[in-house]
Amino acid sequence: MDKFEELENRIKKMEEEIEQIDRLDNDIFELTQKLEKVTSLLVEMVENNKNIDKNDIDFIVLKFDIDPKKYHELPILVSKKEKEYRKDGTFPTLSQFHQEVIETLSISELEDNVLLPIDVTKNILEKYKKTDDYDYFAVCESILSTE
View 1 (spheres, rainbow, N blue to C red):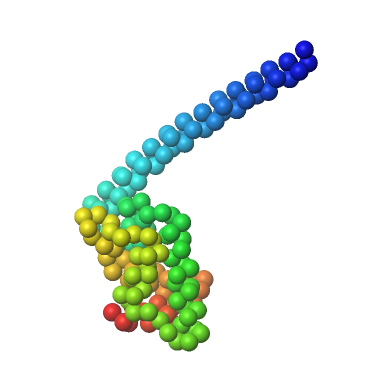
View 2 (view 1 turned 90 degrees about the vertical axis):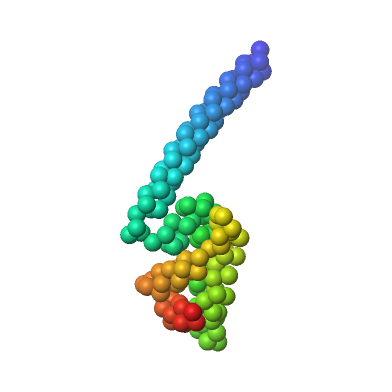
């Protein structure tokens, strides 16, 4: 009888855990739906606001649902170029760097066969040029000068 009770208790515990998983799954679904709605609304607001730069990388990532992990590889790319620049003075042209940004983000086209505008890459370089945490000014300025 003791084994039977133990088995019943284990089954009851499993059922409770399944209920909790179902609740969490439902919560995640609801949050995902809300996030999609908020994202859609935000994209629409930015697109309708003429004062906001449509070539901002944060907007591009949001609008085209680019993998956030890929987005976080951009500072690594800039850092890599900065190290090469310090080591031997070499740096890519703006179009070469733009191609590396496209590859880093793993995108081929955004919509309607439109590629990532080079202005997005320029904005990325301008952003990192102003970063106080690291000294990317020289390499970013050099890449931008090849335009």
